[in-house]
Image 1 (spheres, one colour):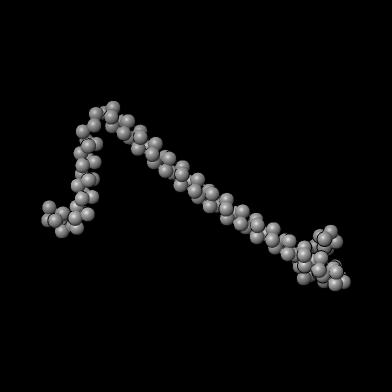
Image 2 (cartoon, helix red, strand yellow; image 1 turned 135 degrees about the vertical axis):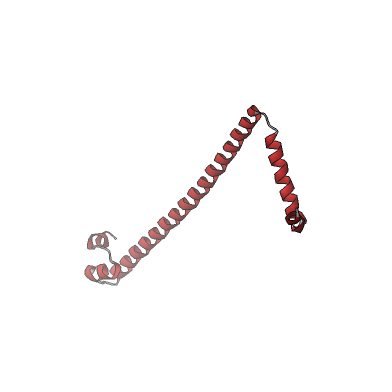
Length: 108
């Protein structure tokens, strides 16, 4: 009791609310307790599924961003190849500068 009196009012309120919940659960019949447990399990399952879906969406967004970055880098290289070809730079030098194989340079 002394510990309870040292707690701030909000904390004491939370303790008493928790005690009330425990008391309410103890007064349930077996059938009511089974229904309560089933509903709690359903609720927790839904929370877990929701959390998983949120994480999946984050992962998919990041993968999409990375794909976009890769596509942008590829487009930049293709533009660089076109510009260098217009300037008359040889395919070998372009390949060394961009890291692209000569076949791709010829296509651009």
